[in-house]
Image 1 (cartoon, one colour):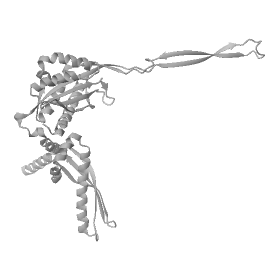
Image 2 (image 1 turned 90 degrees about the horizontal axis):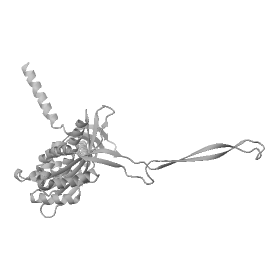
Image 3 (image 1 turned 30 degrees about the vertical axis):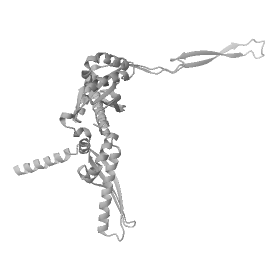
Length: 365
């Protein structure tokens, strides 16, 4: 009995480790075709089948690459020979979906299903980035200047509408006018107007900057930056002597529907250069108005990255490495705060990953 239990334990242990390696895996299907010459012998068919299978598996992997984020793919290209030489380490491709052997045309067609280990590929890509190669004592300092603003109210303006209503009004016609003595009629016109103005007004959203939400954004993004071998630091702490005045200017702009003023950015960059900071990220997020899920009844909140710009400091004038935006994540919970916190966490981590990939793609750190 003990031997049976021991064998079962070993079996499930092996199964666990085998499946855990592919917990973050994606599936793609690929097609391959191979022809052969001469008589249709079993040997020739098997050889052609092996070649077609290899083509199908590589085709599935190429489909996966087509959907890879651009900056990550830039790094992949530099190591693709290494990956393709050891492709079996990054995917399992042993499931035949469809197989056709056409002896008349001497052609083998096959469709294979590939399970790609995305986590392992990401590890190889990160190892090949300039950031990963830096010594732990030489990590690049990255300052974070983040803001979260909540939509407090929205005002929508309609076009001005003019409505014309016509009514028929009976008039008794003098009998001397006609022999029939019947009633005639005239038309009475009423004009009413509704809506805004002759010109369509732009809808207005009013915002409130929330420091608590900002702190949550920073905390969640810090985790991703640290794993990417940066040394994330608080931007406000680095410029603390001037932060109050700089912050007031930013908040005024954000709460009025604007962004982070360029003049404020420039002043912060100059201070950070003196502090030997390598990068700074300026970003602001919008927290939407809560909704109710029709399926669960829970509260839903959307948090969207409106704009994030990453600047490389030092070595001359600051250089913008690029901007990203439009990253929206939804959070769900049994109340507004829980739903909002979940949405903030999701949006922050997605944004941080995109920013790390953007820096890596430049290969300059």
